Image 1 (spheres, rainbow, N blue to C red):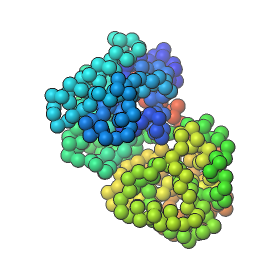
Image 2: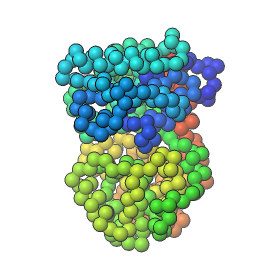
Image 3: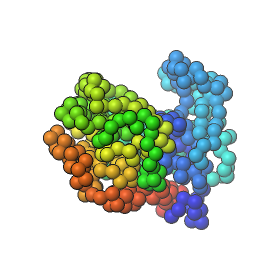
Image 4: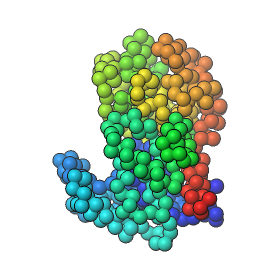
Length: 392
């Protein structure tokens, strides 16, 4: 089913809530919702500011009355400065949430009697559900949240309550789906991450800040946080000084081991940090690497074991060789992605890829990515939403 084919579909008024800014790095949230927005009326919100946000620069720059901006087929909510959540005071907190929901209701431009859907990408938004008074609730877990930093008993309780009321549960990997099914006793739709195939397969322009970095280039594009095995990269770079390692992405939270490894990388002349880029620029970086990496930590209770990397099919769409950690979600693609299961094997597989002996061919990688595009994923999600709304 195509997203813009409404002949057998129900139009929905969707309030989608996630923690990442719409204008930030494009994740599965933006990719899916921007496509669903061609048919459904979607408001996207990060939720209200809290009283603790008053000292942040972003809050100070926010318009007092807030605003809505139509963008990428979605109505993006910029909440007002004056409307603050205060979770410690339940009555005031509920009042603020009620006023936020009223803003969303007035802002919806579609059919007022269309079914209303609360589409939550994280359990932290559970307090909004009752005030939204949705006809349907969708919970979409894109990470193994129980292993992410900051998870606590309150979030665990909210996740269980959200699972209990959800009409549709979506997970981004088999590992996440299995966990949620075990907790809820319900069926879980596994919807893996995809790729904007056209953007990544056709990208060719060499970015200015990449031009002066000599080949071979071994790249990683994505958020730089504690899931990255920086000690591994530091070792690879130190032992292969003719290889240039390139990181493209904004820096997030690091723990002691990853910070130490990151510092070691920074000290090396053949490791380059180019910072965060606009999502439209990202394809041009991945397509100008010689090898692309998914160098994730696998030891300990890190949430990476449950992820389905957003960059998997983006990398494959470039046609360039890919070397990855031994992630459960990547194993089915081992014929086109080289999987390293030891430190020495990382070096061997990168060397093989640089010699033109990487897993799969350019054409085979393209074919896999095309079958796993965001258009395909969005059509599947739309079918699930339609079935839910039709009581199937």
